[in-house]
Image 1 (cartoon, rainbow, N blue to C red):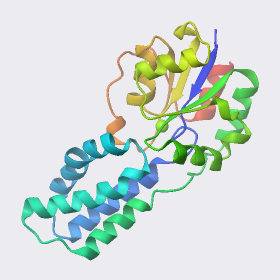
Image 2 (cartoon, rainbow, N blue to C red):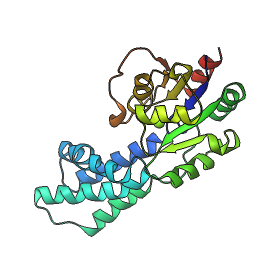
Image 3 (spheres, rainbow, N blue to C red):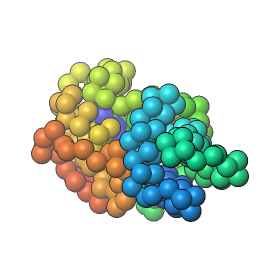
Length: 234
Ligand SMILES: [Mg+2]
């Protein structure tokens, strides 16, 4: 039984991650040029500053500019170095570079069209900035395939929100729902916790934050979204 298919957006249908990853790598290179050791800058960015920024701004590009600037400023503070306005401006620029609708993966939109013509489908995505995320979903061409009331943008994705989403779309039994996404943390584990089925679309260059252990082995792994659709329609 497949009552509802929930499809993640970023790095499942569209190629978002490389821009974020490349921006982070550029920031770390800039920090190295500014004289900060790699491991210290990495720790400051990922472990010291980003958790607070995720809380304040949610996941998404809006946090990247303040995150990058704060990483630089805190490194300066910790090492007793004077802040350089030009470097701070470069940090801000790198953070702003991740804005705009990301490109769809090859074959992803055709596969989504195939899926929606056979099974009830919802695009289920998270962002700290709902309006921005809707613009990205529209900009990526999803709106021509999935009706606007079937695009569900939330500020977080966990088991509780997953269950609420199922109720919103009239699904009584989670065992009849399927989650397709690239994130173990945000897509697969919440679905498994809620008692739903899950298909992990494996990303070649995953974000460290997403790399958590699965809570069980009862899910599928596929290399791309079209493969997930093949599995769902087989
Ligand atoms: Mg994703």
